[in-house]
Amino acid sequence: MLRIANVNSNNVLYDLGSGDGRIVITAAQKYGTHGIGIDIDPQRIQEANQNAQQAGVSDRVEFRQQDLFQTNLSDATVVTLYLLPEVNLKLRLKLLRELKPGTRIVSHAFDMGEWKPEKVVQVEGRTAYYWIVPEKVPENLRS
Ligand SMILES: C[S@@+](CC[C@H](N)C(=O)[O-])C[C@H]1O[C@@H](n2cnc3c(N)ncnc32)[C@H](O)[C@@H]1O
Image (cartoon, rainbow, N blue to C red; front, side, top):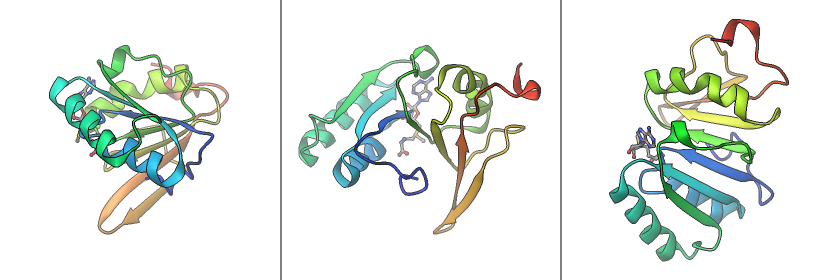
């Protein structure tokens, strides 16, 4: 997912539903990315903070216990998702409205319905979908 999004040290990466923090932590370790993980489950946040400490990247990552639908995403340059099909669909308009044009999004396993991806990549039997936020919300995705 990180290779597909071509992440680098200038990026601000949000992982929505960050679980044990693996995406944010790997991005910080391998690419020097500043990462923010959002998870609603306090236990996952605790695990993620421990994992970040063990990996030595606590200064580049932050985990917030929050509902991803209540999270302001406007400073993201890359967003990663591994959620559920219905959650992706519910999130679509928020992503299109709140993210800056040019922001890259990668979703593991699930697409966003009518919002067709720029790329679909198969890696070791898994599928990743890649989008770039357009200048304007396309008419067919406004509701
Ligand atoms: C399949 S896990 C993905 C974990 C991690 N991103 C990964 O790729 O390994 C999905 C995570 O989303 C979190 N989640 C589900 N709904 C959420 C919501 N509304 N707000 C924040 N986190 C949520 C769950 O607690 C869970 O940790």
